[in-house]
Length: 252
Image 1 (cartoon, rainbow, N blue to C red):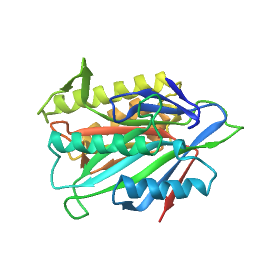
Image 2: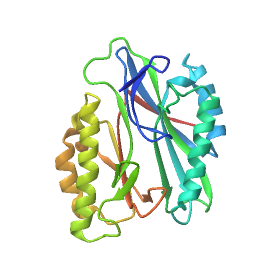
Image 3: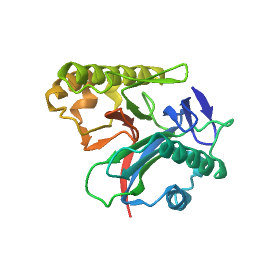
Image 4: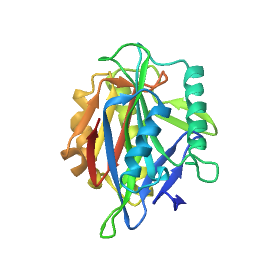
């Protein structure tokens, strides 16, 4: 974990465009704000976030999580996703949000399968730290969305690639839950601490919910939001993110 003193949190560095996990430093908590209507792009989103944080006497560096929704008819080609990531890094760099050249912010980026015009994208939600001198117990945290993809030596291996059978879906789910558990342990937290779990897939996962909830403990009892959505790039077909936050708000 890398300290981010200006942000009030620590982060587990991931690929160049995101961190795998963030955890509030002692004396801080994490809050989450959801836009009633997605901001059209990161530029508009960061401008709105900066105004929002200024009203709370917090710097833009307090942002520790970003959630994007892309309303597209299908998953994007790799080249399109890579271009999105380059723009993402450049915009965060201009906002002075990097730490030693690394993006500290956890991120979820999914393709929604219904409800908005094609080719529309938006910043759906963001998480940020606030002072909380009396915060006790495990730290608030945000895990970036975890796909069923193993990253090894710069290579991506999709678990049970192309498979939608019962055994393939169970293998994918087991990998995602194991990865989430490992990251939770790494930041000093557990499933029991989770206040929000989001699952993204268009596959029929209802038969596997008992298996998932049994793994999630109290985090699962608080509910799992299932979004009819896909990871931004195929052939991955599911993602999951986890958070523990002090408060959540809906903003215009």
